Image (cartoon, rainbow, N blue to C red; front, top):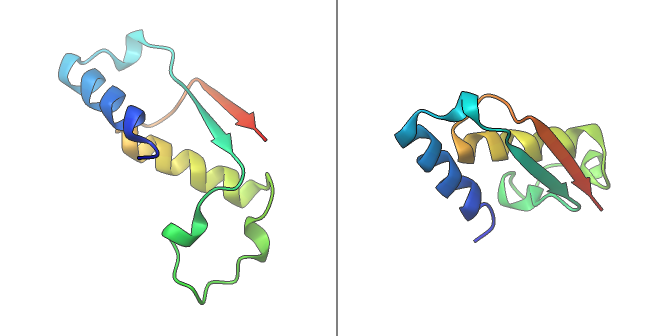
Length: 78
């Protein structure tokens, strides 16, 4: 499952209260799976490639899975 390791890491940090002691990195890989988030009728022209909208959606989903407010490093892997 995509993002499963982020969920594990988020749970681990939450249980220990160690977020401020960690340097957290995650990555964006094209294409972000917008079809899993938005209904079929959504216009997807702004979601292709490494554009701002796709990057932001990917980052927000990672933050949600890890239950954190920010990452220290955000890699772009294309």
